[in-house]
Image (cartoon, rainbow, N blue to C red):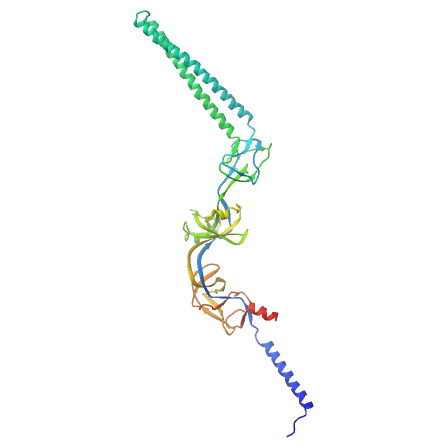
Length: 391
């Protein structure tokens, strides 16, 4: 048997190799490509059933006073600026009140005059009483008549009445001083509690006008007690019946991403707010468990709350985003194909759901919204797909 010369064999082998490469390339091109998916492992952990606000809430102060004088007038003294920290009783604002101060001074002088009149009238009354006593003694000895005694006693009683009248004038003068001081106090604004000045409306020399009945105007000074803060937020009326005072919760703020504050439900409004006919809510308040942690927060920050209705620890859980309608999930198997599995769902919230019917470590798909993600298709984890593409 003679062998085919290499020069004739080589072209045939080359043609076979080319055909095989073309066939492999066609097979690779025609076969379905794996879908890149995001997966999460079924692991034990804590699952909570929570109620969250429907619209953004806000940080509020336990005490906040919008202060203004009950009288109108020109601002004479402005003792604080926005951002100042003040103590209880500290002067904040004073209107021009020279006329009222002068009136109070006159009342004090009238009081001194009334006191002097009391001294004079009562000394005269005491002298008249002594004269009446001596007259009675002389009558008993037969030196004066009964008529003289009557006149002395009548004069003594008149002088005593004048003394009492003078004392009444002293009380009247004191009341007049009190009224003058009350009028003066209506031109002065003092801090009702310690806090921080959030807003000042007005400057020295401007005229301050009090609010007419039923027509709100800007306060002269907005004072906030920032030592006690809470979050007020609306809850859907459907969830309000599940809430109870004292339930624990969490507070998150847009200004502090990734950080949460522990809180406790302190108030549930006894009425429903109908901002829109389709959106009826109940206002709730959550206070901070550790007020010291909230001291750096600003009143008016937007905030969200979650109130914990029930919780379970060390249960198998999956991201809630992995659940499909009908309590079904897609599981990425060892063969790279997606399989649909039915599960039993327990406690759940927007982040995690308690499940039964899955083994620990199973990989469930969380990117259900991607095109081509369905049961039976080949799939690969996105991290692996990215590394393969990089190679």
